[in-house]
Length: 296
Image (cartoon, rainbow, N blue to C red; front, side):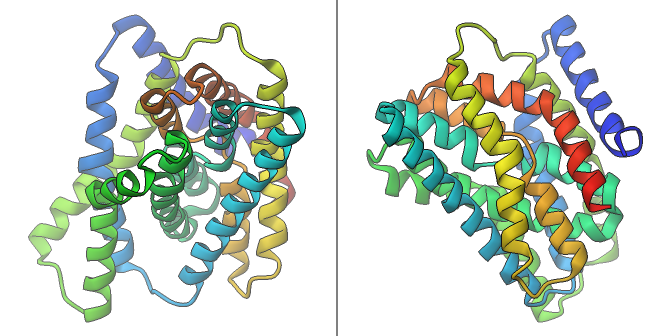
């Protein structure tokens, strides 16, 4: 499982990581291109060609329930340990939101093929909405978060692409063949690009003066507790067995890279969040292998 699924993915991350260390490329430009130009077409193609049914509603229920349960766990721990509001917000960012895009999509594609990829992309879209709302709310610690969250969602092209894909699918409209070829070219480039971008982003994260008590709590919650909670949710949902497996694997992903950007923007313990993001990504090479091995 490690050689067939995890190793190829992490080799591409390593390529981006080493390339960034040696060449010092513009990470923001590549990340922005993948987020605003490539990923939306991948999302549109997936939802345009998908057989939309009730299972997609269950994906939304699962994603929201998992996120809220993890936020509750962080809040309880923060109250018991006497963490500050800033520390609580940083831990929520690093713990409640998983990397369903840069890492989740390629790992699930390698593990389950095209059938699993469809579900992985839907989870990515829902996670993007959650990070753009709940993520910004906790990053901003309640200050004008409602307006910022709404503005963030409206601006995200992935959300626009998802809506258009669902509408085209529901109304039975046919995309012209020449335009579909363009969409295919760009969509096919999205996954390797976002993988390289993550490796480059990780190369910019420092690992100094971390609070290891908070780091350990977040790593255990993100990599172990999260997939256990996801499994408990999935067994009660009347969905395809493949989707249940995808739900558990997606929940086992490390911290989302976007949360580092939010923590920097709003001052919610950026060093702690970025450190957890890097460590959880590295350790997930082992934890994901274990999770996949238990499911297959």
